[in-house]
Image (cartoon, rainbow, N blue to C red; front, side, top):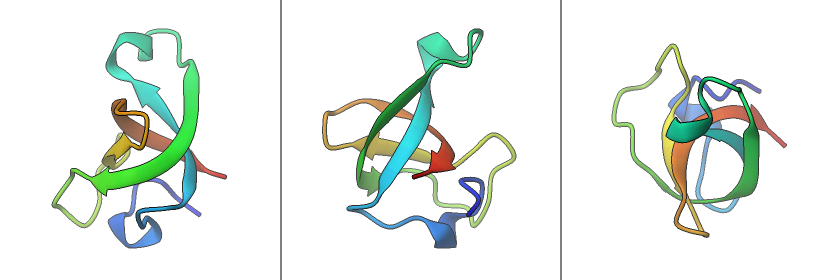
Length: 63
């Protein structure tokens, strides 16, 4: 599934996100979605979410 389409994401699923500080390296952070922050149905760089850990980033992979 694609992390660039909002309909593929729901709170409670495990994803890998890229944090703003990690965008140059592409380092991924895993976690569980707490809240979806992007309102549009899709985004070319990934839908922005907040994880249960409080970290915010764009979804790169659905695990």
